Image (cartoon, rainbow, N blue to C red):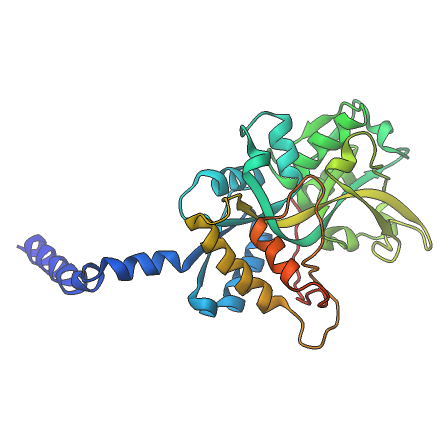
Amino acid sequence: MRKALAALAIASVFAASGPVYSQSSDRLTTLNQNTIGVMADTAGSLGMALNFARAIDHENDLRLLPIAGKGPVQTLTDVLYLRGVDAAILPSDVLAYAVKNQLLEGAVARISFIAKLASLDVHVLTRGDVKMLADLAGKRVAAGSTGSGSFIAASLIFPAAGITIDEVPLEDTEAIAALKRGDVEAVVIVSPRPAALLRALKPKDRLHLVSVPVGGNLPDVYAPAILSATDYPGLLRKGESVETAASSLVLAVFNAPRNSERYYKLRRFTDALFDSLMPEDGAAAGINLAADVPGWERYVAAQEWLDARRGTAPAKFSMTIERED
């Protein structure tokens, strides 16, 4: 009897709420056309998606739905194939990784970026007598879990330098603890500079950073960057610096052709987002909407927005994102 009453109660709820959603197919169509799904590849970048959602809420009648992804590779796959995912926040080098490993056929032609959101520096932290990247040949290196940003960087950078390492699937605090114990010879961390975990280290830890030169085919994927003692006083002596490689955190979209239904949706999203990021005082800081990304093409709607506003100041949008994967 109780089960029957419960079933009747549930049925009455659906009966009461059903007509709201069935009364107009046009309303449902409009609702979906105005909703943008943005997937973040890690918990660190999900905060950025949430900020974007607040920034464009109801702008141009749009609603942004932040979606938690499952790492860079899966997120790249999802933005190409998964319904409801219109854009994704992910590291730019995942595209080169997918091409190298033949994971997604034709991915380069099918994906583009709206904006570069941040630089992601490659940190190679080591100990002892390791003075350069080549000294890690044959050594145990904590390069993050499979498919993580650190794993992707290590999978591209070490082979490009002709170095074979023994990859260990440790990351963040666990990886640094293993390095201090001597269980691994180095740790790879990809993060905006300065990475909080590395900045917290002290000279007494006897750890240091080594250079990651951008050579061979790496300029097609990474840009050169500098890590200084100002960034990491516990790892570098005053006035000391090391070269490294930097990928980009990008807002990526499926490369929908101009005048397609998806193009118009992405154009509205781009216009609303870029308009929300434009500075009121003309000061240039934070996200530069015109910044290029090695190995990526800018989406046509983003290029059209920039072309229409040539001569205006770069965007100012302050955002803190901690990414150590």
